[in-house]
Amino acid sequence: MAFNVYVTRLIPEPGMKIVRENCERMDVNPKDRVLTRKELLKNVKGRDGVLCLLTDTIDAEVLDAAKGAKIFANYAVGFNNIDVKAATERGILITNTPGVLTDATADMAWALLFSAARRIVEGDKYTRAGKFKGWSPMLFLGGDITGKTLGIVGAGRIGAAMARRSVGFKMKVLYCDPTRNEELERELGAKQVDMPTLLKESDFVSVHVLLTPATRHLIGEKELGMMKPTGYLINTSRGPVVDEAALVKALEEKKIAGAGLDVYEDEPKLKPGLAKLPNAVIPPHIASATIWTRGKMAEMAATNLVAALKGERPPNLVNPEVLK
Image (cartoon, rainbow, N blue to C red):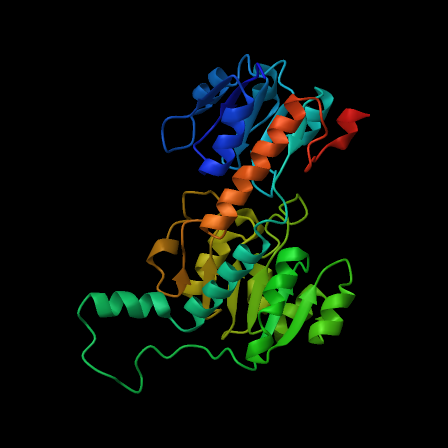
C-alpha cells in the first residue's frame, strides 16, 4: 500500500477514489491544463506508477525520468501518445481503457453527421443573433439523411456501432476495412468495398481507424476529391488521420458539402481557416464526454494502475511481453 503515484490531470472521482484507497501517496496536477514538458519530467520522478492522459507525450525521456515506475496507465482507449516500444524495453507496463467509450463515440459521430447535414450549429447561431425573422422556403437548406449511403472507414467496435445507428434511417452501408465484418454484413446488408469506391459512392464518410504511420493523412486532398460535392466527412478517430489543411481547402472550395470533426491534427490548434468555415462543425474533442463513460474510463485506468502496483496483471495491458 505504500505506493507513490502521480496523476497528470484530475479525472472523475470514481478513478480518484480507487487510487486514493490503494496508494499511500497520490499527487495530482492541480491545474486544469496539460502539464508542460518540464513539469511532466519533474513530477514522474520517484513514482511507482503514473496515470496519464492522451494529451501527455510519454516518450523515452519521460520513461527514463520515471525510472523505477512499474506502469503508465493511460486514461484513453488510444495510446499513440506513448512510445510503447521504449516502455517495453524498460520493463514498464502500458495500459489503456478500451471498449468503454464505443457507444459514446458512435453517438457523437452520429450527432456530428446530423449537425453538419442539417446545419444545426449555423442555424442556432443565426437565431441567437436575432436574425431569424420567420420561416422561409430557402432558409438553411441542408443535406438529406434518410435513405442515403453511409460509408464507414474502419469497421471495428466504434465503426460498427456507428453503422448500426443507421438502421432507423434506411441507409445503405458501405465499409472499408482490411478485415471483413461478416456480422455487420448479416445485420445491415453492409458491403465491404475499397476506399475509392466508398468515397465515390457515400453521402457520408465516417472515419473510425487507429492512428498509425499507415493511417496518417489517410484522408487527404486526393481522397477528398473523390467524394461527392454533396458529401460530408465525419471524424471522431484521431486528428492526423485527416489532412486538415486539405480539408479546409475542400470545404472553402465547396468540393464537399461539410464536415463534422471532434479531433484535430495539431490539437488543440486548428489549421488556419477551419474555425471560420460555416460548413464545419467543430466541438472540442468531447466524444467520450458523458458522465458514465468518463467515470468508467477513470475506474478502468485506476484499476489498471493499482493492479500493476500490486504485482498483478492489469486487465487492459497493451504490452504483455513485459511479463514474459
